[in-house]
Image (tube, rainbow over all chains, first blue to last red; front, side, top):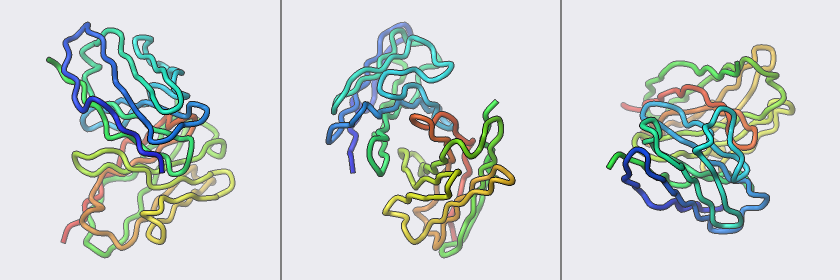
Amino acid sequence: EIVLTQSPGTLSLSPGERATLSCRASQSIGSSFLAWYQQNPGQAPRLLIYGASSRATGIPDRFSGSGSGTDFTLTISRLEPEDFALYYCQQYDSSPPTFGQGTKVDIK
Amino acid sequence: QVQLVQSGAEVKKPGASVKVSCKASGYTFTSYGISWVRQAPGQGLEWMGWISVYTGKTNYAQKFQGRVLMTTDTSTNTASMELRSLRSDDTAMYYCARENGGYDYWGQGTLVTVSS
């Protein structure tokens, strides 16, 4: 199975700053079948990005995804208070679908 | 609007079974597959399996093979996941999610607690 490794484990930033989250795959993910999710405490995950770079419905344009092959990035251009949360990447190219272990973005 | 509404929290003893339901509304139920994902307390997301609502075909994670059963009822737009031979490490929040290039809609989660 494809192992996804997210870095850093925790990102401490201030509102208004730029956040860059990394997701590295153990083997190439074809056709960029890579998604990003945001999860707040006590809530279900929310789809932010699919196909590595397409924003899901209703997602603000401060969220952007990039990358291909084995290296992917989620960028939040300017952090809003509601963006401090846990973020997961997921590959859905090959079975089983797998998730990274998560990156927590917290307030500095 | 698309909604997935799950059944309520469950408390089970080790060795028992649990069945979690997920009622879909706001879209054509047979047009999308449903996956089940669980999250143990303080842990990450774990994919359990997938069911094609249209064909009934399933694909289970190897870890749960022989212990999980995913079904759908198109007359009530409901997907269900049954997990048997529960252990304490099955204590988790269980989510259903609609597959559409990633999981674009999620249920609210069902907490299953396994305790003697």
